[in-house]
Amino acid sequence: MELNKRQDEILEIVKADGPITGEQIAERLSLTRATIRPDLAILTMAGFLDARPRVGYFYSGKKKDQHLTENMMNMKVRDFQSIPVVVQESLSVYDAITQMFLEDVGTLIVVDDQSKLTGILSRKDLLRTAIGGTDLEKIPVHMIMTRMPNIAYCRKNEALVHVAKVLIERQIDALPVVEETEEGLSVIGRITKTNITSAFLSLAENHDL
View (tube, rainbow, N blue to C red):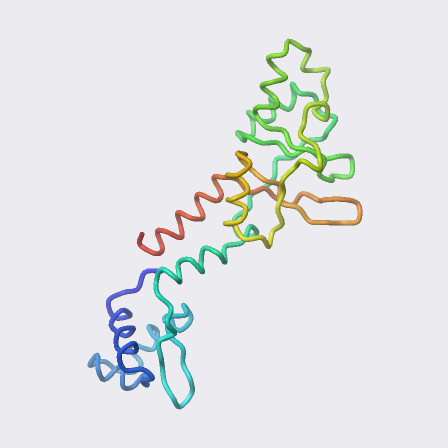
């Protein structure tokens, strides 16, 4: 979050002389209370200032870089996940390769007849099979996919920074986003390196980094 000049001035006044009322702040800036009301609201909602009735505004002690870190930690998978690219485990390797190119993705999520997560197909899995000289139309993807419990996945309420760590540690491109049911894991989305990069870039731009 980038503060404008007046908001920075208000912050410095409150740091030096808080607790201080809105009227007193406005007087210091030679402005009316109504003029600075939106600025005070922004600073309070952002966590830089706290306000108490009949006392006034005081500095919360939060620095801009602390606020940036908190915003990053508050980013959730549900806010940045994309539509999953899902295939049936009975699909042939040939058709899976076609699907991957048509969808322009690096990972296919494999499900069973009840649409529950059973596996993951990466480019490496498909390439390894394709160069083996076998008939790709006769091999179902369940024979070459990575199976449970070796699949990494996430839930929609997980922190995005945690998912980014998993992707880096496992050196993979994407995770399925799932919901747990009695029958298994239902796939409700996917989170990719591109999703995470876009999210962190937007955060950086908003904080003028």
